[in-house]
Length: 445
Image (cartoon, one colour):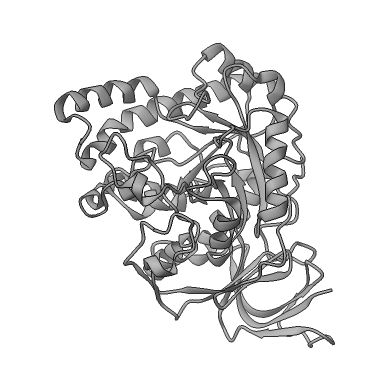
């Protein structure tokens, strides 16, 4: 049995910050107190005032396994995740093959059981013709259902409105959606190809994948959720206009319709395309400074409920292509927490609110059992941070299989020093413990 005693940590949990000790025994937080005597055989970690937060629960990643492992795999990306303070992830179904049958979904769980250093769950992918399989999904063992209402890969675009309504009407599980109107984007893309050919300047990406495309799709999904009573979660909001579709006058636990924002939409704006080019090409697109500020405002006033990464790596060879051939997406799990802590230091967001959006709310929203909080009896998924130790992101220190980061050249003011997953010290001052794996998370539904 592993026993750890974290001494003199600045503990951030449930909207408060206090100095205290945390005792970990056999995967679980055994005790939290102002001062805890060291038990026999305990390994003592002197935090000396470092910040201790619950592990980030990332509700949207693409780890590319199976089928796309030249870009990434579960082992490489979870190494980067735990180094970045992400202790639990929910992965998307658009791998090869796509997780659109129960058998293919379970195959992904088997890979994670063998290779994942973080805790894990996966989403089942809906299509126009797999409702029967979708309804077999076990709500206690699977995070939710993922639908692409735009920008899909393979056959995962759900564009049959009758099927869509049937899915919304038939399941009580959380339906998470990517909302961009495909017809609008196709028309815009055609117009710009006629003008520029394949080498469309990147500055037009947020005009092609426009505010109109996002709002049209999001508002239709919300309308359908209200009509059917479905439990809807909209991924990666990118526009200020969309934020007004969501409410903040009731507790998260009572919301039937929730929203997520991703790190890149809070960090970058269209001004950054000139320097970063296709390296910040995402779907939905990074948009204007006004959109960025509007997303922050909605995150702070609780119209937006959770923070995520939408970690979606591609090789540099793939990204360094002309506009129409460069895929959208980028790697983010290693630097998401330190990026948000930079905004804490700048006074944009209080650290308690950041922890709420990264850890508490994903646990509440997905009804994850015994995670997302620093509480006695909960799994010890914990991250210790030195907020006075800076780090600069370079190609040499990124851990992603793809070997690059959109944050290259950025200096963050904070450094993650320790990450615990299920009470095991998995990341310790730059060293990763590869002898232990994470657990499949379960859901209190």
